[in-house]
Length: 192
Figure 1: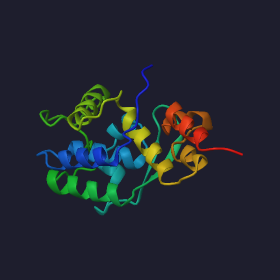
Figure 2: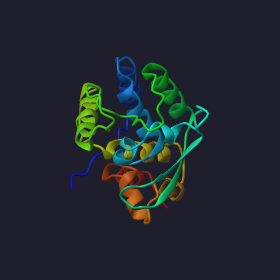
Figure 3: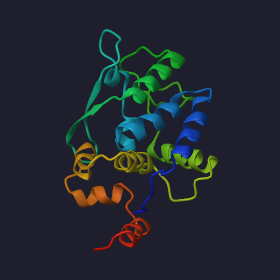
Figure 4: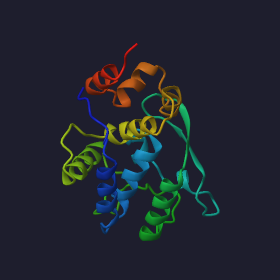
């Protein structure tokens, strides 16, 4: 199993968002924004349909009830301002209205099938490479970025663990990007 890293630099996150926002197809922008603001696994993101984010009256929902593919656990994911804005942008640009339509389809295909995890992996690697990010990245990078920046904003590790639906807090420690350099810095600044 390859261990991937979060995107630690807020500047690089802003660069990626800007690059994707300017693209003709808003799909990639929504994948990125949804991933770093929801903490969902990439497979769960790719499986989303319009009915998951909009109600029968055409209004955006405030949250998503999802059964995670990996764990089988049900999770409620609240939509923050960034997710709602990205969804509105995406829906305005694409004009999709069929509630059974997948959100993240192949732009060249006329079929209602989501892009694959492999394609998402390729896209994420390209986005990160385009802004000079030099670390191992992949599908889990968006989820780990969510956890890392939650921690950097002072959210407790227990709360992050709950938001990521982890059964063990040790898993959360790996997700939030605590590494030896950070441990060394803490120890060097500590003294009794």
